[in-house]
Amino acid sequence: MHEGNSQQKAPSGESQSVIRNYLPELVYGASDGIITTFAIVAGIVGASLSHQAILILGFASLFADGISMAASNISSERSKSGDRPTLRQASHHGGATFLGFIVAGCVPLFAYLIPEPAIPPFALAAGLAAAMLFVVGAARAFFTDRRALPAGVEMLLIGTGAGGVAYAMGRLGAYITGGAA
Image (cartoon, rainbow, N blue to C red; front, side, top):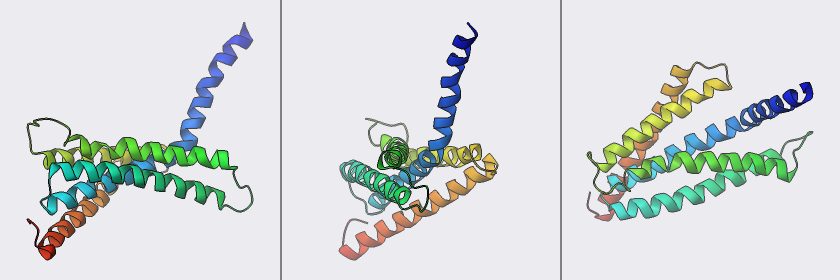
């Protein structure tokens, strides 16, 4: 009976170990997914393009960038000297990066999937992205010596800066090309 109890507790400890092992990749993927996708949205809004363009380019970029991030993570893991992980082990880290990127990166696009949102879709996308950036940034406190509030604010500021630059570039691009900005 004692053996059964210890066997039941092991998966919990193993689960925590697995989460802790892949948490950096999940956070890295999530933060990049949010920032990249919101930057695409902000650039398209800055250029005064359609909601359809936001969804098409947003999802195309989301999946292409997610695959690129995963592949880069796998290559990075396999480039280590000494205790180099197997391709399978490295692929698990790449998969965690991809998962974080896709799940969190979808958030800014949700605002454009709601049929008639109560607030303008870009404002909703910006608010959702800001909230997720703060949460993902604060989550770094779980595996670093950082405190949650400063880590969350730091990630929020980085994402806000990237979104602002993308919006300005979208406006500039529309101006240069004679688009509707």
